[in-house]
Image (cartoon, rainbow, N blue to C red; front, side):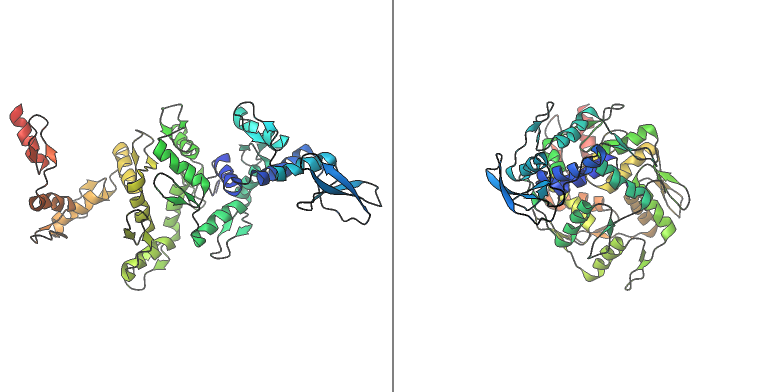
Length: 437
């Protein structure tokens, strides 16, 4: 398989860096220094054991004393930080380290004004503006702005996942990703939107969510002009224009332009190993199996924090949440229309493709919407599952029941723009409008 996981070049790797170090840039700077030193061939600062006396050394940046020790064998002096105990063999290395404690950031980006505690971190940041990607994968040719990002990317080819969740056994190729995953088990959601109150496990997820309220879509396709909230969404969209299909099934060779589509396809090879002991229904995914079991148990573990409504399916809960947030994460790459639910988005896409995957086994009529197909089937079976609670009348379609309910409620949602008269049915309004013509 060419690619197992959608790395989206620097996008997802950078997100991992943000998740792990967003609030502790000092740690990020140290990691960057360690990575870049391999390229710059700088000497790594390491701890040492000492056996001689101490000489006082004062750091002007901290106004605190450090201990200076001398190695008897080499005669070289070492400086030890009194705050964390780390030792250095050069004055400059020691001063650079002290900025971690003081918060001093003397290096400023001339383009955006962001400050950094170390020159090498500024150099790395500058590449965001210049677009420079000096680290290239020798296997697939992808380039990256940071050496550490290249290292994480290489696990795509090697399959290495050194970080394992102790609770569920899932493996990850990056420690930060494991930390994010652990919040699924702990339920920790520290980042809360001040506008709608929804909480997130990751700061990056909150930042993306905020764009729903601001309407910000900073990533624009240069070919068709459609804009997106996330850079990764734009990259996936670009494959519509390039016809790139980087995700290939290693069993049959079929290729796809999205990682999710490959995952769905792989289920055709895997079968359905998860079987419900109560009704015998089988599932290809464990998650769907667990959701199904709740139909029998009646369990509804997902509760809306805003209105208290409960759900037994996580995806139904997530769909419901978007009613409050107004989020529409599924965007049609052909016309730009957005949807809050994946099912509605997939139905819409078939308008452009002309695909009609649902075929009536009795009369052969085809449909592009599953709900239209299910409504049609009832014309053959005579089934009327939707019952009016007021008068007991039954209907084969939910929409028909909703229209009937207006008889009892007196609701008249369709209003004439000419005379202001209202009607309970759209057809009645259309007939009335013809009288004005």
